Structure formats: C-alpha cells, structure tokens
Length: 98
Image (cartoon, rainbow, N blue to C red):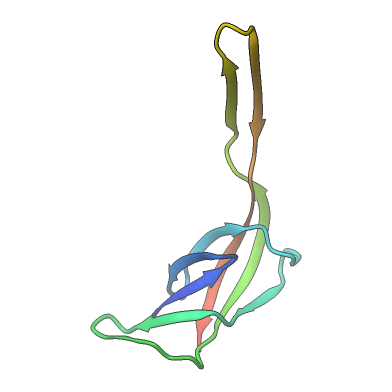
C-alpha cells in the first residue's frame, strides 16, 4: 500500500520501508511520528481518498543538505557578495500505513 502524505507543506508518496528526507521536524532521533495529513492511498490498481488513514514514521537522524552558493552582483558598481546556505533536513523511515 502506498500513501500520499503532506509534511511541512510538501507532499511525499511513501510506502512502508521507505526512507525520506523532509524539512526539519521538532522530534528527537528515535522518536515515532504519526502523520495525520494523508491525502490519498493506493493499493497499486486503485487510488482512494480516505480521511481516516495515518502513517507512522520513525525519526532516524537530523542532517544538513548540500551547500548552495548565493552570488549577488551589481555591474559597474564594484558590488559583489557571496554566501552559502545549507538546509536542515530530518530523515524519516516509514514504518506502517494504517
């Protein structure tokens, strides 16, 4: 069974056993999260909109993504700025869909 889940305004299509990287969540490593915002479920042939489905996920770790360099420049003004950004993520393992 697969489910379309909304986590922090982003949608993920998951099934039990998957590991996904979501925006940082307020949970410690090893905690169990219950995701209530399930938009759709699918058994492989049919898709259904079922409001009483929840997804259980386990927090594996918190980590940072790759560095993104941001470069600003105004031509003919001798203005240049470079800085980097690393997004925080949480790695989740999908345990079950109930």
